[in-house]
Length: 143
Image (cartoon, rainbow, N blue to C red):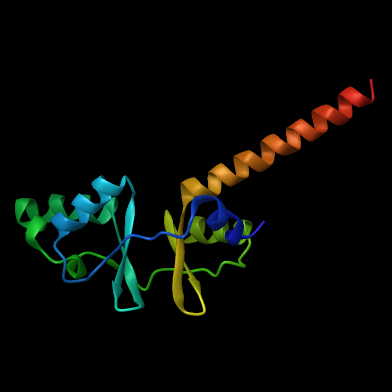
């Protein structure tokens, strides 16, 4: 199973934000879109990510003034990216190893989607359910 299969199901829409945008704007986008992370871009270049985690840490560290700070002050730089043909198992390992919940997907250097840990878990659960159903059918057919 590849990352492409996740993108086919969930779509390839990715909400991006500029590094100069305010942290408040990033938080507003996360709430409005009901998502956990934004890809920070400049033109077509992926610079990094900003997630709920960075925003919470910023408010804890800087107080109310964090809202007016630019995203580039707190974002994750140099994020792990994957291609659509990567296996889901490999991406699960990358997420676990790097302790990240969101991974941008690049196709030919261009942003093609984003995969969250929730997307990966959902796919794995669907695979396990399908496997259980097949095994149940085989068992029942043999009775």
